[in-house]
Image (cartoon, rainbow, N blue to C red; front, side):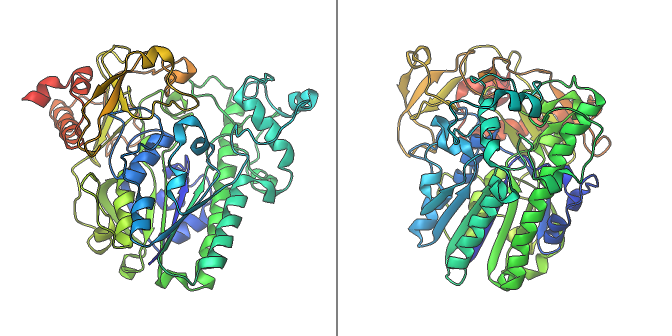
Length: 509
């Protein structure tokens, strides 16, 4: 078996024609839907970027035990397990977070890997004397402060060397992918993970894609919204959304080149192709930009997944309504290569659904951010359950790698550390239990803001798919909380987490 796993970042489900989107033409994603099974009830797990990738590597949720951080030494990784079975894995990525303190251990699990430079605030292009007047003319100060201490400043520098379309990281990722395929296409037993940071912000697309979405906005680049409430003018809102649309259109075009390659070399008969994302992004819906700080609305948590499996040609063009989520990708990739699942895995191989899409794997999916609300969706309703006080003490981070996104835990945090017995996934290894201090540099506290709109809400997705008004359905509310508690138990969740969420009574009942 050969497998190509394409992982985009922040690819909104509603942006794709295959999921009913009509604001952006996505002929190639739609074309792939005709070749694959499209999963209609696919959700995130742990949020955001690196927690999602830990789910993806290990086949289990992790947001109940720690925040954003490295792959732990005891974690299973699908790439390691493939290697043990004699399956070669290669990662191509422009995701800068792998190469920060809080992202270590992921890319090195692969047999080989390639890092494409230049996304977001990647410290790539050195420029001692940047052209400040040029930056002031080309970039809006609303998104790009002329302050060297801002991470966004480095992105302005990086863009100085992105003059042609081929200079952009996304096109470079696909070029590297074609290099891998040219070198290895005729070999067997390999997996290529082609990971594109696009269409994650900043929404910077090549000119030919951007020109397809004209707006009335006049001003500097406005393509990197802060995770905050919408305060922009209609013209500014349209500009930001147009920049995102242009980036989605670019992703679609380059993904189309991959489909052309599959066609040209008749790869559909012997190569699996899996396409998904880690989470979505709010583009002014519900009065917000971004993710993490607000409830995990459908635009953030309900994400696309399409799978072509050559073992199931009859699945082409079909749809599956089973509730699935990000951790399921790990056992699915292993299943494609006939690799047994470790005992610690709590997710499901989706391969059997391609033969029997009516089967049910779980009643509901739960998802969340460490220290934030927990979401739970069953295909009909979704609940965002907040703790009585998200600022309250009581949570601990369980880790052997005390790193936040861009730096280590500080000494105040580390002074609280105690060695404690491990959990059912640590293989007998004890852990450090570190107090989750309210001012720790974890998402989304690392920006000093934290959570907002922190009110438990239940939505009826059948009657109100846009989530315009919460509903009061006590029986549904209670049933969804039972699913939360059941999944917490399956994942050996620390006892204090139940107390913190106000679920201790349900847990001990």
